[in-house]
Length: 261
Image 1 (cartoon, rainbow, N blue to C red):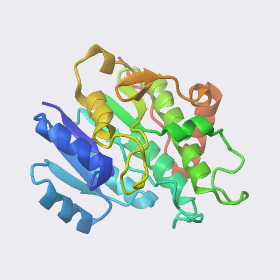
Image 2 (image 1 turned 90 degrees about the horizontal axis):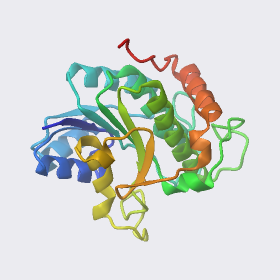
Image 3 (image 1 turned 180 degrees about the horizontal axis):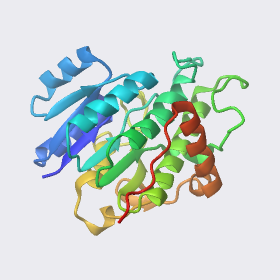
Image 4 (image 1 turned 90 degrees about the vertical axis):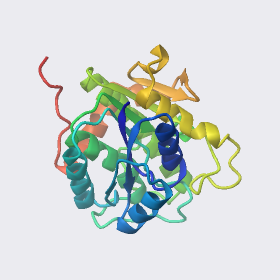
């Protein structure tokens, strides 16, 4: 039995992955944005071990969320599932002065990764839209370009994949992978999404707990339990280094070096 934390799991694919893991006999910790959502998901899924709360569009609340997670004790896996979608009609700036899409999709998982005691496995949700993106370190916050929700989202999902590969390189003792659930008909994906909703939650749960050799790898990108090639920019060591440096500057927190053997 594994203990798995899933961010952004009060609805959608995160909740579906939680249901899948619970049905398989694992302990699951859910994450909700606020206490109201936490109460709702406890009623919907009463078998969960705990629910932690925190708004990932706030650096302060993300730090507090990391403290809550560490107070839980040992975790076997964390699935970084939370994210802002591609349908935002305009650029939204958070109280920290960041583009909300970038803060929630990239900075929050970076900060949680840096502050939470590393589990044995880390899974980061990217998207097939990362294939059409390119790094734009000259305008990460979309203050210079005309807003495009799809383009912004695709860029952040490219950075998520780069973050996962950077962590995999930095922490060889942890199995770190990234994946796309496909374009599925959730609230984020929309009703016209063509992929299989049921399959959308399979791969992240599989990567978090499976003993199959195919799931016990690190530094890979998956779609429906199959390893695939990501956007080459995500594997670029220079892109990864720039991303880690930017996230460290924003948060004031460096990604730790691996513990001594």
